[in-house]
Structures are given as structure tokens and as C-alpha cells.
Length: 292
Length: 342
Image (cartoon, rainbow over all chains, first blue to last red; front, side, top):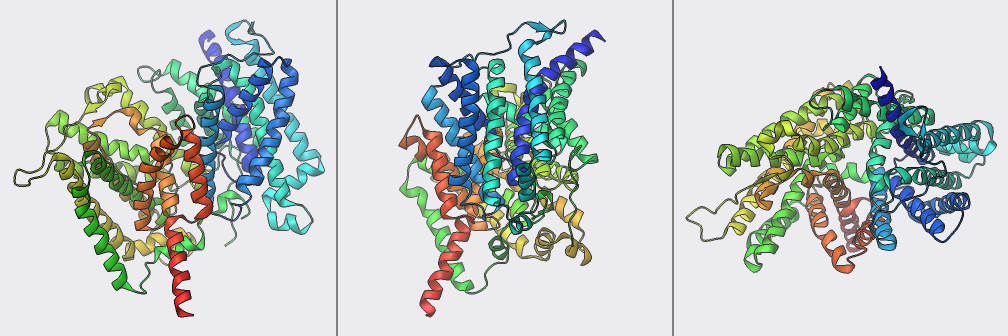
């Protein structure tokens, strides 16, 4: 029982990382109807910006806020320059653009800040929490920030006119345009918000996995898996999916003999595929209904 | 476009048009085809070892992309995991040749067969999933394969992390050419047969059924097309094509290792397919050229920023030709013929 609890705790700590990433993935999916493959690299780039600001002597929280704002602007600029012209192109042309963006940002990280692994400060400290060595203050802080972010987004999308306009623009662009919503700018705003969430996720993940140009790749895989598991149309589902992936991965590694340790990622993916067999749109996703 | 999952047909009209071969001037098409084959036959005599190897690789990647095209371009099912089938085919060949001493040409049908069965089985869960959810399942395959290949339980077969060294096949004694050129011609022959097979498949009743399911699944079902059967069969054939490409790849590179078949390979195939042109058979070879040569070009422009240059080239191509090289060619041909008729 003790072992189970500890493993679940450790899973939650990993899951918080995945949940943050999954949340960013779902946000941009809701805003633009595409899965952003470059999301992880955008987050890494933001983390590097924050690292640079801190290295120049900026206090942590000032750098944090500045990075979030810069990332928001960066997200909007990327949408305006790269993806607005591809607005009418096929999904697959967009996919190539995402892969290109991934490649460009990844290479730029390495060029500007070289490939050596860097440490990243944490504002929460690293003392053990809740009487367990498997979860420390930083990881607990990460879980708290993810929860806070989710609550904030919920209020934004349910409670403000701008949030409503964004949902309308994503859900039914034609009708939204007819009632006077500027759909193009709503998409850009969606990119900005997703980039800002990615920046927060990146800055919280960097102290755990250390900062290097490829730090987000593995995390992004789990983030996608979490987002799909929870359902791509549900931010809350994505967070839950992210935590679930972290826990499944840890429990598989501990309890499945012989194959568990080496193949825990594979096992987590098999579990997700099995869930999708039963619920093809994810646990909390809207299932597709189309008029014939 | 209400909810994203509704898009069973995520392709522009151009891709659909390309699926039905243009019958306007068959003679011209045949001459072009004959010319390309003739050039392909004489090409190795003007180049040396490494270039011949690269050209072999272009054909192999083109074949792998053709496999992906059958699935994505003609049947409308996404896959971001075809690197896994490529890797599986490569490993079947390597294991049969090096562990069991089977001749290299017999390993190709074996690799194709294994991949067909695995692809068919993969097609079964794919029936319930669409779009991005299907993409995740194939993506899982791409991520899982290197791990399975490294798994210590299979080490006796796969050689674990170290992989397997594959002997290069020699030319038959009666041919006065070296091993590189022999492999080039062997690959050319296999690729020609496979492309001819794909072309006739696409034109056949089965091909039309597959495209009908892509364009309108409900109407297709109403016309009596067995959608689940055709979709899973397409998955199987797609895996077969990519698996045979992988088998040829193992012969060409003479080495297989788990990390050669990472997610990056799958993504390269997808990029090659999209830039070559969805639903176009010649477009696959353009994709093969792009996947092999553009990263090298990017490297020669700037070593430090090779990835960025690669990305910028990708963006330029996709901005210039949003429906791929095939769509661009179609557009250019239509434009030129309009000019002439004026």
C-alpha cells in the first residue's frame, strides 16, 4: 500500500508536467482546429528566453511575467506571419508548416544558447513534501500552478465576452463572422494564449528535466497522449489525461514484471489505445456528429 | 467545418481530382514515363558509388512514401507511424538473412507479408478512430517500435541496441557490375513493379471503392461497398509497400539499429508525401528526393543552423505549392495548355 501510494505520488508529479503540456495542446486545438507539433519547441524557446533574462540579473518573477508576455506576442506574430497565409490550405499543408516551425525553433535554440545542459531555477524550492521523498516542493508547486491555470482559463472562456467570442470563432467560424466577431484575430489570440501557457509549462518543467534544446520532445509525446486520452476538445479532460498518463506509466513500471521497466512508455500507449477503442473521442471529448 | 472530428475528407478538391488519372493524352504520359525509366537505367554509369547509393535511397524512400500515400492519399486515413513498418520490414530482412541464412531476394516477400499482416491488424482499431485519434495510434507504433527492438527479451533476434550488420548482396556472376550498381538495378526493378502494381490498383474497381470511402463513407456504404474490409486491406497493403521499402533500405544501408527507425523517419515520410502531392504516384519520387537531399543541402548552407534552413525550405515549398509538387505540376500544365488554346 505504501509503495502504491508513493508510486501514485510520483506519477502525479510527472503527470503535472504532462498535464501542463496537454493543456497548451488542447487550447491551441480549440482555437485553430489543428494539433500544434511545434508546441513543445515554442515552450522550450520561451524557457530559454526566461533563462537569459534571469542570467542578466532579472528577478525570477519579473522574468516569469516578462516571458509570458513575450511568448504571447510571439505566438500572435507566428500566427500572423506563418499560418494566416495557410488559412485555406489543407490540414496537411499546415502540418508541414508545424514541422518546419519545430525544426527552425529547435535549431535556433541550439544556435543561440548552444547544446550544453543548463540548470533552471525554481521559485518553490526542492524540499520534500507530504512526507514522501518522491514529491518535492517544486513538483507540488507545479501541480498547484496547473490547477490555477485551468481555473483561470475556465473563468476566461465561460465568464468573459472575449472568451465567448473565441469559442464561437473556433466552433463555427461562418456564423461567428456574421455576428461581427473578427475570426482571424480570435485565432491569433488563441495562438498567443497557447504560447503563454506553453511558456509557463516550459519554465516549470525546465528545473526538473534541465534546459536543453530537446527537453520538450519527450514531454510533448506524453502531453499529446494525455490530451488525446482526455479528449482534444476538453481542457479539463486534457489535464486529467496528463495526470493519468503519468500515473499509468509509473504503475506499469512498478507492477508489471519483466517488461514493465523497459517498456513503460509502450504500455502507457497501449492503455491509451485501449481506452480509445471504447471511447473513440477520448474520455471527455465531444464525439463527432455530422449532418449528412 | 464545425467540429474537427467531422472532417472525414481533409483534402482539397485538387487531391481528389488527381486520384482519377488524367486520360487527356495518354500517349504523352507514356513517353514521359518511358523517358524517365530510360534515364533511370543509364544514370548509374555517369556517377560513382556514393551518388548511386543516394539514388537508390531516393527510390527506396519514394516507395515507402508510396505506401503511405496509398493509405493517406487514396484511403484518407492518417498515419504518423509508417517509420515503424519501414523498420519492421528492415528487421525482417536483416534477421532472415543474418540469423537464418536466407537469400536476400526471398526476404522481400517475407518482409512484405509480415508487414501486411501487422498493417491489417493495425487497421482494425483504426476503423473506430478518425483523424487525430487515428494519428495517435499510429504515432504509438512509431514510438513503441524502437523500444521493442531494444527490449532485452528479443535480443537474440534483434541484436538489441547494437542492431544487425547486413551483408551487401553481390551482383550475379554473369553481370560485370559492382555491388552498388547491382543493388541500384535490383531496387529499380522492384520499385517499377511496385509502382505499376499501385497504378493498376488505383485504377481498378478496388481502387475506386477505396477512394469512394474516402470521399463519402456513407454514400459508399449505401452503394454496397464493404468499408471496413477495404479500409483494413488498404492499411495492410500500405504497410506491405512501406515494409518492402524498409527491406530494400536494410540491404542498401547494410545495417539496422533501433534508433534508425525513430519518429523522425515517420515524420520525414509524411513531409515527403505532403510536399510530393497527396494522391499522386510520381509525387512520391519527388518526396523521396526531398527527404534525402534537402537535409544535406541545409547542412551545406549552415552547419549550426541546418535544422532552421531545413525548416525554411519546407516553408518555402509549402507556401509555393500548397498542394504539393503534383498539384503544382497539374496547375502548370493546365495553365500552359490554356495559353496555347487561346
